[in-house]
Length: 153
Picture 1 (cartoon, helix red, strand yellow):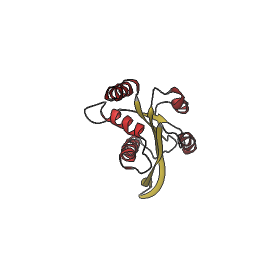
Picture 2 (cartoon, one colour):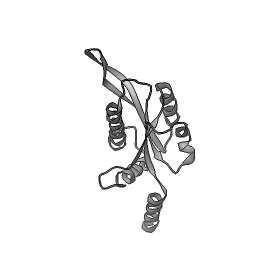
Picture 3 (cartoon, one colour):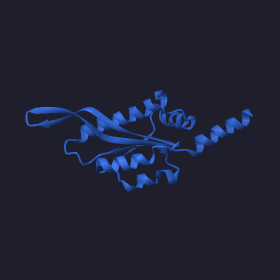
């Protein structure tokens, strides 16, 4: 029995390729490169937090995927691709595809204090800036909706 379990674990680690996809909006004039990098960082942290501490993720497969992703490098992170999702409605539509999926997690990143400058005044607004999907890149069917988007520039 232990041999079978070890073989299954080895097979999982050999055959899966966990990837974090970040769907960054490109329709926001105020979302410059620095802000986009900050939002991508929020998305990566939110994904890890949700799997490790979130009450909604109890799927052992996702926890194994995160473990593999975190051990891809000695610094504790794996592959992350930032995609250009054009606008909020495209982002929400694609993320909804993953709502009930057991082999992926997805969520929206809402920055409650997103800064928008208007002349000399900075307004802090609540804004959906990006979303994320964490899944096995080797699962072609699961990745299909993400093929609509190119890399974020």
